[in-house]
Length: 141
Ligand SMILES: [Zn+2]
Image (cartoon, rainbow, N blue to C red; front, side):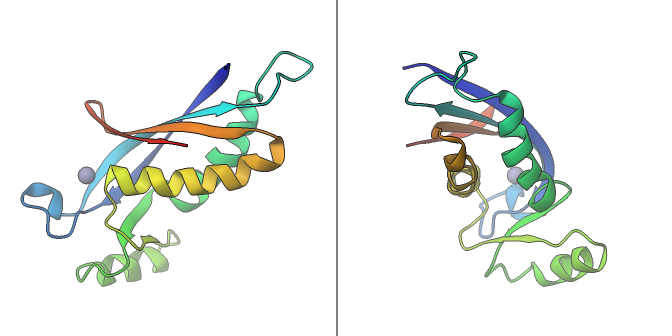
């Protein structure tokens, strides 16, 4: 199987409620996602999908919902002041039902990317989400 992979990056804040150490505090990351796609057949130009389509669809969604805001757990008891401030400042918080670990963020991104790229005839096979240069989580179909 031939696949293609597009890397997308953004900046966001999160915290991990009940974390044993410093990750329970609000802090930021330069997230990077490597989105790997497959298709039944290559297109007329020999591509799975143009890299630019992944950027235009998934990258635009990330820019709108995740870049320069906070990704927080809906039930986080510390989140209300951040949510109020960011809403006032024009960058509403993105709520997850689960704790915003790399594992849960990559699962959310997989759900979104599959929905956005399905109309373009490709399947999302794998996403690796880098939370730090040394730590990542991977979702596979
Ligand atoms: Zn973190």
